[in-house]
Image (cartoon, rainbow over all chains, first blue to last red; front, side, top):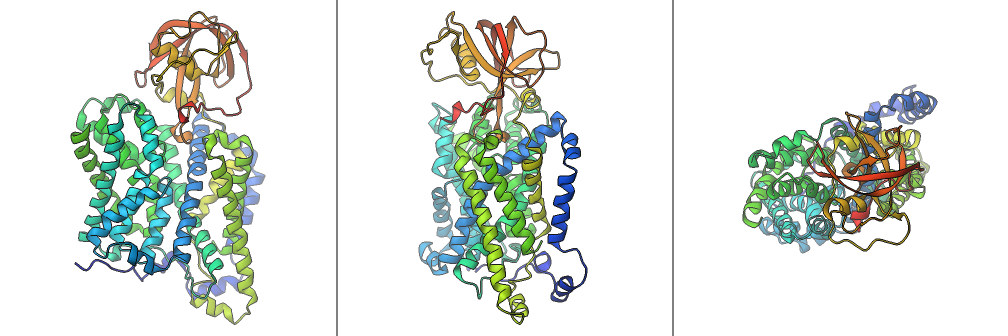
Amino acid sequence: MSTTKAAPPRADHRDAEAPPDRARGEQQGWQFSSPLVLTMLLILVVASQGAIRRAVSAPVMQSWMTVFVAVVVQALPFLVLGVLLSAMLAVFVPPSFFVRALPSRPALAVPVAAMAGAILPGCECASVPVAGALVRRGVAPAAALAFLLSAPAINPIVLTATAIAFPGKPEMVVARFVASLLAACAMGWLWQRLGRTDWLRPPAHPSDEGLGKGAAFWNSVRHDVMHAGGFLVVGAMAAATLKAVVPANWLSLAADNPVVAVLALAVLAVLLSICSEADAFVAASLTQFSLTARLAFLVVGPMIDLKLFAMQTGTFGRGFALRFAPATFVMAVASAVLVGTVLL
Amino acid sequence: MNRQAQAVVLFLVGGAMVHAGSTDLYLRYVKAGLQPMVVGAGAVLMVASLATVWYERKLSRTGPDDEADAHDKGVHIHREPRVSWLLVLPLFALILVAPPALGSYSALRTGTALQAPLAYAPLPSGDPVRLSLVDYAGRAAYGHGRSLGNRRIAITGFVALDGKGTPYLVRMALNCCAADAQPVKVGLTGRIPPVLQPDTWLELTGTYSERRAKDPVNHGVIPFFDITGAKPVATPRDPYDESWNN
């Protein structure tokens, strides 16, 4: 098994870099440059702010915007934290560190990396850029992906929140920890078996060659925030639409059948895209559902949701996200059902 | 988007975050405990924007010959994907519109999230006793009002009227951000004010009522409150109830 492939050297240059001649032409001739477009957009929006405010004054739109802004304001600090951490990994930690820190056999590196997820305090927005930096630093993708999936679910902050949300049910915390770790390791091993490096096509990352450490650090921060931030906005729009438009009493119809209940809450976790630090409280309020169904909600949510899917597309490429997301969903549900049957 | 434009967007987004975090604006969207994170993240974004401009100027001052050289390294003309433009949306939403905290529209679409309290602390002194709406609802619904007795109570929340015109006093409870906010509803009985406008904030005084109802959305318990007086109040500094965070 030779799966310790280095990070894919070939990058997707289609969006990321304009061909040289076109780029030069843009600098000389009269063309729309992005600062010009941005200035015009800002002036236009400020000039028509009265009309915009009137257009969004309906209760549905107000509630949509509040949830949209809330998801962005809540997730951006964690994204910035993850981006700073990832820039530090990229600039200040030499690749040889990871070679020494992780077992050389990928089959062993996967569980070690998954357990290491416990030390990244925060929610899922922080783990995407960090996992991206790990892959670029030459960590085996299988191990980096196990870390990506486990970190948002098994860190102490999230487990404490779970314990508070389910008072008198410590088995819920244990079940969440075990099921999340199991699913993360299973996905790591699955990637090691079936994953192909050419699925991982991270968009071109700015090269750090010839730059000082400070320049490289801030270059990485700017790049990651612009990338992941844009995709975060896509995810926030999707989550706000669901919260403002879909009626909540559809759910109570699903609660009666145990199989449908598990699937319904797993899908709900994907659609709602709630921060993993808060999802336990929402799960606790879904009292009409079985504990196993609520466990599925808690295991699926931090691993895959609309916001994460959008951010993974930005960090690892669309081909990767389209394959990885459904597999993660199935694995997380299976793991939750298995652990739920044994422990709950 | 080229680097100058990116620097502008980063600076504005960072500035909007610092603005929201240093005023009470952020309380409409996230829990109070996130304030240092919001301000800190905003400051980091502003520094990243200034650093971008600084290094860009340094790069362009190294001479025109280096332009092609820099480009070969993929340093200079590196463009971010179009999706980055979407970052202006939360900026406009936060600066120009600043949508209000979730109100009656969301409250009626979501089932009441009242949970059984772990213990009933003794009532504070005062007449009327000022209780949070969530505290009252927990004592009334799960403690059968035994911890309330005949005391006069004052609770604050906003008005919500369901499809049939049944009035509720509601407080949204929040754990992390408004996306997970859930209503706690109290039904109204007694001297209900004749004109109730949804989303207006009221301080109601009154006593415990034994009446209960089931929330049509999730069949949760809705306790009632027997009103003797009502007065409009300003929206509280933190519109959400965050007692579950502690």
